Amino acid sequence: MGLFAAGQNALAQIRPLGAQYYENQYLSNPAFAGMNEGLNVNIGYRNQWRSIPGSPVTMSLTGDYRFEKVGLGLSVYNDNAGLIGRTRVMGTYAYHLPLNGDNRSLHFGVSLGMMKEKLDNNNIIAAPDDISAQNFNQRKAFVDGDFGIAFTNQRFTLQGALPNLKKFMQKDDQNTVDGSTYFVAASYKIGTSLDVVSIEPKISFRGAKDIDNIWDIGTNVKLENNILSFLGMYHSDKSSSFGVGVAYDRYVIQGYYTSQLAGERQRTGGDFEINIKIKLFNEGK
Image 1 (cartoon, rainbow, N blue to C red):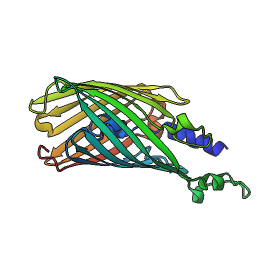
Image 2: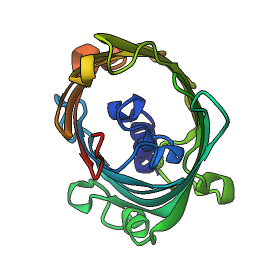
Image 3: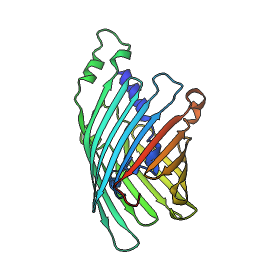
Image 4: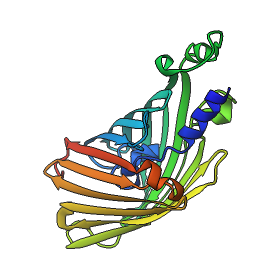
């Protein structure tokens, strides 16, 4: 089953989308569904390791809506890495509980949906009697879920999430999910959208199965009225992420670049990502 081991290793190295750090935190934590008023739609696309044939490609679509204290969300995530492709569709329910004073709130969220994994038979090189790929593709989609919690006030955000809850309920040696075990992050806003410049430093920790846990540290800088934003993050795997965003009316367009691991930069290049956010039914935009 070397094929599956290779697939597990490839998917384990897939990083989270850059948009999850600030602009679309719903990607990493279901508690952020409906965090903001109105309907928020995000469309993301990333092409990794462009210089390598069969390089991983990731696409995402999320939508979340706030109704009083309840947030509802839908997330569709698809990536293809070499021979392995997977699609994950999740529905989310979140509850936002206001606390007393200083705009403090507790947020809880749970996602539930389906995951489907498939091998690309057209590009598999194997013995004629090798039925491993056929057996893998005949597996049915399975139920998966995420849980998240967050505390926020006017400036401070503390959050935690448990992704891929299936791993706690059932062991599956053939499953190629990247093995994320937990996500914890804290950030602090300095300034507001009315200031000429506002910044939000952030640190996060990502647990992972069979590889070293990863921490990320960096900041997001926004100009007055959020018209321009700049992101910089350093990751403990010795890679870095940079982003720039432009806001106009109800639209935000962002581009990201993430360097590869220190030993792979010359051979593989980096990751390129674009995210488009559309804000609907929100009078405050």
